[in-house]
Amino acid sequence: MGTGQLLWTTDKYQNVTDENVVYIPERQGFAISLKDKLVFIRVANGEELWSTTKFPGVVGKYVYTADGHLVTVNFQPSGLIALFTGFKNKIAKFNMDNGDIVWENTYIGRAERKIISREFLYDIKVEGNRVILMLNGIQVYDYNTGANQWSAAFDFTPDGVRARPAEARRWGVYGAVADPVFINETKELYVLDMSNRSNQFVKKYDSNTGKLIWSSPEIKGAKAIPGLYVVDDKVICQIGGIVEFQSYEVIESQYYTTYIWRVFYDNVKPNGLQAFNTKDGSLAWESEKFKKGITNAYVYNNHILVSSGKELYKLNYKDGAEEYSVPVTEGGVGLATEIMPYKDKMIVISEKGISAYNPDDGKFLYSGKYKESTLEDVFDNILIMKTDKADIASFDLDSGKFKEFKARTGATTTLTTEGKFVYIYEEKVVTKVKTL
Image (tube, rainbow, N blue to C red; front, side):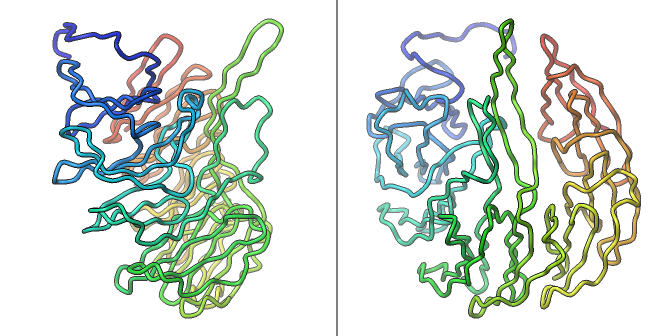
């Protein structure tokens, strides 16, 4: 990087794209997934350290352990399906010194990344002698042997949440099912089972043994349950609301072809809010206020803060009783698309900017009025909104003030990890902009 001097090059590995190369910083090497093998090469000089034919597909999210092993699952990128024929789900533990597979097993579901933003859609961690894979529920393996300890995982395919655009070559629906909730003190685990349309439940397990304690009454008709919260003796489900969509679309005409990369959010119906008793899974209460609309919700001091898009609500978790209701119009930034906690404030992300409210009493605090735009990124006190024409505004969440940068239509943006700068990528130009 200092001089630009070429360090090494090789033509040994073909069909290599950003989808089948993973950098392992702990060992300063590239794991390259080829059609017939997985190879690991040293970054400094290109030396191939080892290869194996026993791990088809691409190295996914992983845990590098203190004893020099890599625990990971394989996955099949949507752009490389033809490369990995005969693919089978595998979770494995590698010896990173020589590439030997200490053990391997299968997993339930489909491990993947978001098609545009590339975040992994699952998590994996090692706790003591357990490997915990959170993918469509939870799957637990013995760290030393790979043996299945228990699982509460369900194959979930988000078909029907929203129609796939006719021009979409790749299409992803994300956040339609809430993550499992662990209660460490009592070793309780709450999981959503949405494995098919006609059977949707909340299930409670013992997180040590995987024993099913109860299953709730059926949650009928839900296409998405993006929120699951446990407050004291209640499990609260947000039915419907804001769900993320990503698509890569190709539109062909007689004279030209248009390529579109889209990340957007939309409200999935039906909407509602239901609460179940943690003791036995019975229905505790159901709110009728949100059948016409809900964006999202979150827990604040054992209360539930909810946005319907037009109103902001604070509900009592025990019975769903309303403690206040305030219109979002005070901010002057249009209807709410999402709410989020920030320090001691409730931030409302709206159609034309942001506003802030006191979550205790619903009092309006301040707003930043922009133009029609959607949420792009958040880091610490910085929130980025972006218009259809790729203009971006950088908001200070402490004040609502913002700075604007006007970009070319079709530009993409990246917020740096510390949140101080945004890179704007236009046709032949990259611009670095200070956020605040």
